[in-house]
Image (cartoon, rainbow, N blue to C red):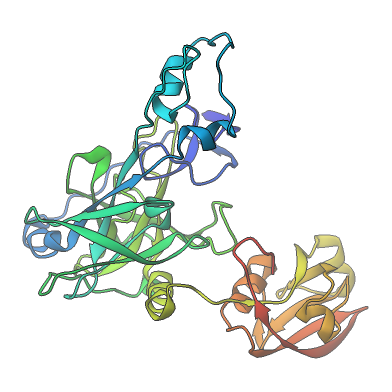
Amino acid sequence: MLKQTIRSRIAPAVAVTALLAGGALTTIDTTIATPAYAAAPVAGGYVDLVEQVAPAVVTIEVTQKLPDAAEMQGQRGLQGQQMPEGFEEFARRFGFEMPNGQQVEPQPMQGAGTGFIISEDGRVVTNAHVVRNADEVEVTLSDGRTLSAEVIGADTATDIALLKVEAEGLPALNFGESEALKVGQNVIAMGNPFGLGNTVTTGIVSALGRDLRSGPFDDFIQTDAAINRGNSGGPLMDEAGNVIGMNTAIISPTGGSIGLGFAVPSDLVKEVVADLSDDGAVDRGWLGVQIEPVSDEVAAALGMENERGTIIAEVMEDTPAKEAGLMQGDIVTMVNGAAIDGPRGLTRAIAGDQPGATVELTLLRKGKEMTLDVTLGQRDVEQPA
């Protein structure tokens, strides 16, 4: 059994890692066992399918310019200081002035990931972390053409980005329904691992609804199809070639695949991409509360068996929740008549409505059921429910 507590963003330990080379998705504590796994072979393979869908899978290259030396130093030079060990390489990369007064030019940061085309006129989907802080984005098609891409919008909460290249008649992939997925179903992953170029791997759906604690919208598809750094933004497809997920993260002690890969479900990708297409942003509803799970003791005392809801730990001032009359200790059990199971359920239900919408909350207050109508505000990325 391999047991490792993760404490750093980039370390040779077990890590949940965004698939853009060198990036970490989140910091978590986890225990994993090194698995022995093998995907069952498929008679005849996927030759025809791969030939059909591969042209719609693209390589994405990003360039990020670094601040100039004055910005990096806060307008202060380093003359007269002793040069620390390894500083010369640090200065070369980040453009600091050397102690002898020599200026070293900063080198642009570069990275690569994967994407897939969803429309003939050049809309491309990838992970938000692939294009984060990018000054230039280029998309390389299967026919060798490299096109400059515009970032239409990126949603960091779900790690989904939409790009646009100027082209017509491009091959495009169709979205499938991730809600219909079953554990054990065969899947195909495509991407650009370690910059090698388009690569195809196969496996199964290992689990559904995985929460990696990277954000309130975690609902990952887990697969044992081999995916690695550089696969970020690549499609996970069913046997009909429909996109049922977007490869996003792995758990690995080495940075390479050990059969624990994770994809954003296609149903969520479709929803976010549609929102980004409108104005480049995703609008989400917001209450203005801190929330916690309902403990076993509280549930038992209130006679709650199946529907656990979530407890309001704090109501912030000048928020929709405060204005509507929500109170600390209230237990929200339903939103618009739909049962809520835990904090993630409440966050998703509220975020799924538009700012300005009015929702009906069913809650328990001191053991008595009541309802409140709340007109939602606008949720920022870092805000709680």
